[in-house]
Image (tube, rainbow, N blue to C red):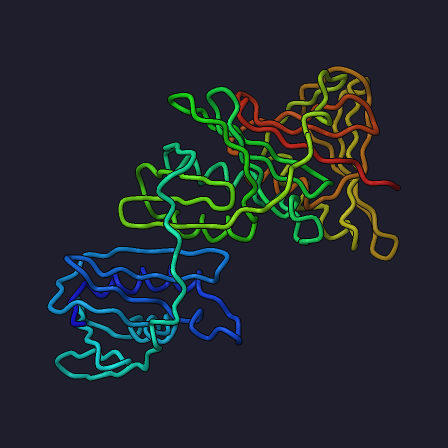
Length: 366
């Protein structure tokens, strides 16, 4: 193999691919990335057996070849290599050499024969979607994924098609986020669970790419294809609960307020919310105020009122402060609505004028 390519393109591809490498000591080859030089492209592959990626970068191929290289070593070297627009890399046995006018470097490789084959899905349920819309839906729901794998379905994002929408849902059983993406044309029936930890890496890999992504899904895997990047993730074998049953059909209380006002008041309660991060939210239409209170027996307490348009019955909730802050940080509408159907029921948060998203948070006991 002998390849010349733009240093910045190679460095960026390595930084992305490195996040898909594995740390298993029993399979050291997973800590490496695979270079494949063919035609006019240098392909860079990485996998941890749960998630895999292939990135293509333009290159001048003098000699084709395949080699496995430690991504972190090569990436760090390129990051600290100044004043170089292009780099030439050449395979020498199982090693890689990088040469320039004033330097020569050798990086030890690994036998590529042991590198796992990446599954590239070509047949299955297909749909195309704008990348920014896909990432927006992932970001709108991924923070609500459970951090424990005890119940794999709650450690995943549930994706399904509904009429002409792609719907994404995540819940850790204490809260739930649902985001709908309109599709330009009807799609085949889709219902699957993507591991939440994989979604985090998919977001990072795609966040600087514009255009459309092609999604292909089978029973066990899902692939995301752009012009020069291909990502494959395993799917969780399980069934997401019928969450629609817990969404209130009608509301007895509603408060509309400025999103930034709520964020500012919640930040002020952080010091007093304690280890359980509890805040008390009072929505009192009868007295025309919304109040957020947090109290810590060892430190003190704080109470803040927020201007709001109110209607309905008086309600009061004990809530997790972080759960509220998470959703308000995501919502990008100037105004938000808080709706409830009673004290013991879920509080529903929406952006005013945005019917594509809703967030439910369950009251805490106390």
